Image 1 (cartoon, each protein chain N blue to C red):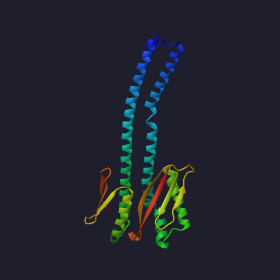
Image 2 (spheres, each protein chain N blue to C red; image 1 turned 180 degrees about the horizontal axis):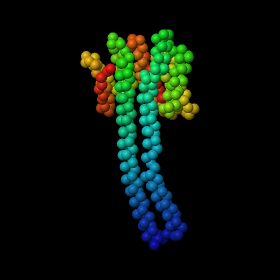
Image 3 (cartoon, chains in turn red, orange; image 1 turned 90 degrees about the horizontal axis):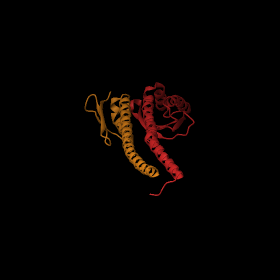
Image 4 (cartoon, each protein chain N blue to C red; image 1 turned 60 degrees about the vertical axis):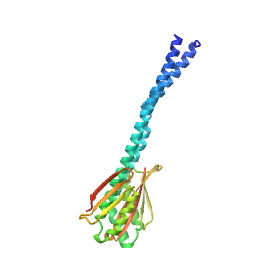
Length: 145
Length: 111
């Protein structure tokens, strides 16, 4: 083995330090980013459960949809605007950036909750029975993270 | 002294490589375990949502409209990746949701 000079020893010492730093960093921090991503996915799922419940539990939302379809067969612009206001509050509470609602027999509408760029979307569906179940409407709600 | 240092460096590098290999292996395993746990959690949540939708919407229909409602229930269950079977012969009617991918299932009585 050739004799090492002082400068070479210092270089090797530096390489060894970098290797050690890389190992320690990897062991400590490598798993974190994956966990953050999947936690976000779970948050969106939880929000989905709550938003689906809102369509049944929130009497204002349910009555607006029921009255609109049962009386006229469609949702008027003011009814859609009212639904948007109600859903905006849910979206803000659940921490989603946008909500898309697609009700059978009506035009799709969206609610912008925050101005951030939507990254991920999950869709949830529910049945809204009208006229005692003689006219079931399937509602598709998409939540954007 | 310098020879000793070079030997120590080689030994340390091998040791670090070994530690890195072992830790990356265990991290991969824990990461995989975490991902499958999240997937199961997501599917379990979907099953709960489908169950909730079926129970609540059934409570809003008249008894003579069950046929149309059953079709809607099957449609939404497909969207949640689960299969629904409803036994109207029992009283109260009994519903069963099965997630064939993960083997999860839930049975419940309709209101």
